[in-house]
Image (cartoon, rainbow, N blue to C red; front, side, top):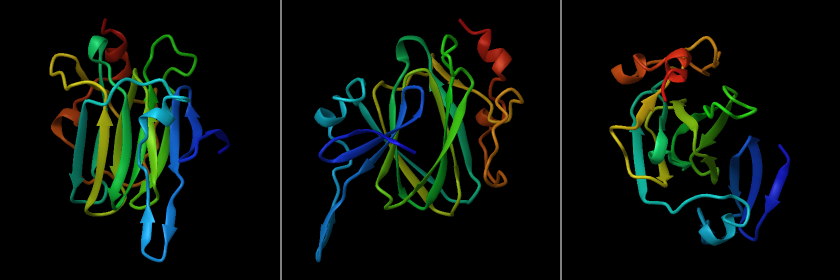
Length: 189
């Protein structure tokens, strides 16, 4: 993966269309290290995003727990920064912007605790993840408040996406099991 931008605190890599991987430059010494996880001022020079309004925390007990693919629609469309604080996950992003040249393209990004990487998920992208270890935790910084009216879930298992999960699904919610097919998603306004 090539560096597409660099700041004093971050390396930024293009993943898919407007989605990027942000890798922190860790400053360490004999005491340990310091990591600037986010710097709005520096990142806004290279990534256009709105103000963060929520920080969410997700804990998954079992390896193979699968969550997503989630997004919010219309005026509630959100951007997210994803960071793994415990365990290991495969993070999945899917371009669900119907007018995009990379529509229905997806990427899998491996995130581990202490690897100091964040994934930036733009508006119109779906997001999901699968745990690769027990007791996995992520935090994600989001730019919109949650909307029950405009929340949407698209199936990981839709044949048009052809997503290859890294491990067998051990846990999945009823909502995610019954998520929309791409055909159903395309029929939404």
